[in-house]
Length: 429
Image (cartoon, rainbow, N blue to C red; front, side, top):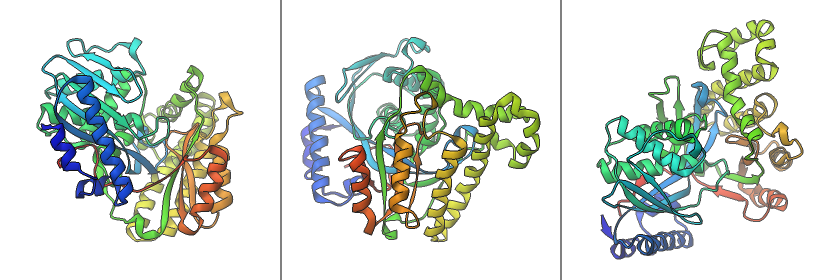
């Protein structure tokens, strides 16, 4: 714990090695981030009347390869990015967690009652309760704390604000009560468990792992209880390409759209079940094709198409990593485009058939192809049905690309990002 004034003085104008790793070296960006932390510490002092605090940061993530593969125990390629959630936190000596997030009312979680409450599904408090419940089951200490949180990972952006929040809470509990002994991977697994069981969303494990571990990583979920995480040694900056994530909006929160999203893992698994296993990772494409005449009436054709996508994108991750490790960036870009086409044609998570007139992702992909064909790469990013797209843009087309996309989706919707080395951490200044 440290005094707020001492921390503000240590951060200064943000020109320190830790902030360079988290936010880059642009002096105006560093100053803005320094002011951001100072403001949040002052908010904490006002809300909770305390002066001894710890600082935390949790990144968003970009999915680079493997679209909707993780929930069927597949492979992914992902990276932590320099948009993050930050927190100012301190123990409060009680059995209650109190959290005030910027722009939202304060909420509390009573640690004396940690049972699942379905009436609280899809709430932040359910996530916090689920993380605490799972950590307690696994033998970790939990306790009451106060926190102010401010996020720059846009909600619904495909940069995974929910996973960033989950592993941020895990990091706070890990460092305040467990001396930081929980690994990043275990933090991720606990966050996913909470989202599945307490939040009510059947997500995979990629988002939490990328946010918790940091860097550019490939993850193999063949054994989801022990995912194999490997760092990929590749310097994106040296390519002269910008990684651009564009917030295209869209997406719907009604029950029909939630069911559309949930149908992705459900339909993939329905094909697997017809082949006698629980997930697609346990079968081959050849086995699926052999059984199509027998199973399509049971699963539907879309489920088989989604299984075809899974098999293609799962192998593509291996090939993408190999291309990056051989420094064959052009081969990598070609596979990014192939992945995007597979998501559109086979996985069918580009637009929501319930709201078929809203095709924000489809339009953004068309505009991207118009500018980048033959020179860059573009694909859906994250869950789909709205949210964001991803593009790798050569510097000489960057201004044109941003102008084209922001002409349609609005100023400030294109985020030029870099891969951040650190995952969800306590800041040691």
